[in-house]
Image (cartoon, rainbow, N blue to C red; front, side):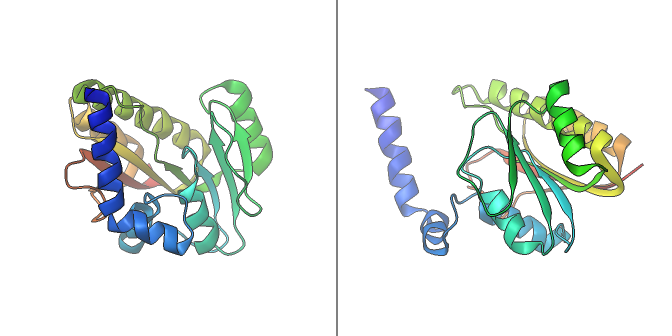
Length: 203
């Protein structure tokens, strides 16, 4: 009964959400696209001719936006699940932390890349502390991966949650990047603990 009530509340929230309606009108796969758009507007993430790795789960609205914003792009999407194809974007289905997947990534680009994006988050358990911890661990994995694959002037953008490991993620990011900013886009729901870390220029 409680689960049904939560599901109905979520459905009602979605129906009232202006960003959900806007995404449908504009042809994007989810409201998450507007978070990335707001990040780009503030921090100038996208540049024409950029190579980009998207560690974003399906349905792939971040890939949609990157493909639209970056002319002459080279984009690779990586996730455990396959998503509906977006333009000329190549997709690898697998875990980016596995050596065989890392090799596929390196082979595809043949050189280091300009941008790594990550909107990864754990499937929520209902325990906000656990959800925050695991999501921040995913961010750390993506950050360490980025250190190896990014150009010196590369950019890394990732979701992180407020919680016990929040400060640790920021501390570690400042060891790796010269510029680190924390930002909560206006389109993020007010009751969400999510923030985004924007890192630029490797040390």
